[in-house]
Length: 384
Image 1 (cartoon, one colour):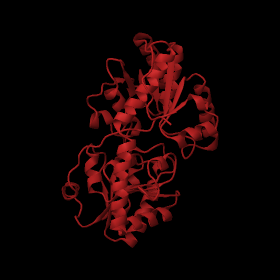
Image 2 (tube, one colour):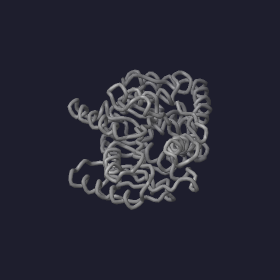
Image 3 (cartoon, helix red, strand yellow):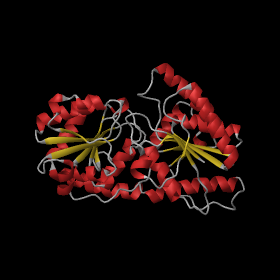
Image 4 (cartoon, helix red, strand yellow):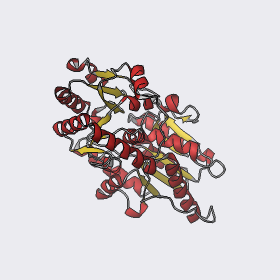
């Protein structure tokens, strides 16, 4: 039984959908439980995964509301007692807390939780962050396996005492990218000039992603490269900040959520990420699969996706440094081509959907063998 707070467009929903589709149905009987997306969010199931069946828990959303949360806990516990899963696997923080608590109440034999990132920096005040850490420490004691999307994410969690090293398995995201149109057709569809240099951002427009920093970089880049255009594929609570950037109105193209992200990457010369905190951003993996170089802040496990100087350029969370890197890539056609081609090769090898499914299969198989449910696990995959 897989539990996630909501299936909004982003890395967790993509990975969950990949596993629901990819795990062998003769070996695994899966059910997915999730709440509904919030205002300003797009539903990944509606946009990209209509084939994935979801059991909806109306009170299992992002917002923390004690009465709703208790109802969600009750519904999840009842569902587990009826379904009687061998494994409950939770994704995202709120679902991780309620799902694991329900699994304890329902006496589910094995509990697994995936950290798609963490809330240790950039989300809450120091006091609230301390409370989050204490809660995750307690939850780790009733969890059999902890999964981190990257080594840096795992190490950050271990550094504050969440879980033990032996509990963790690193399973990076895995995805595929649809075949996009050619560059000229993509730009025609998006209303972009054919001769412009295009910088794209794909993801939520919210505080942790620092849209204010994105705008600062855009202004700096425009001064150095006047023909540059900026694409934003996404939405969120700070989308209005982009809409009111009057000085960039002619160069800033706000697309909202689009199911055909491959069209966005096909139209782009590079991708920009300005976040304060990240897990392992799927947008950067998609950019690599499309052969598009990246400039990004070196936070979380970004450095495990983007090899600095080889598949893109990494910077401190600083607008000036990000601007310099962006201008450098836009002005150098040969550098842009080299970084993009190396990104295509690296991401295809490391972040394919089949690898994610195999890694997760191996994790479940090792649990099944240890519990005596299966005679022996299949060979381990590429976990590190």
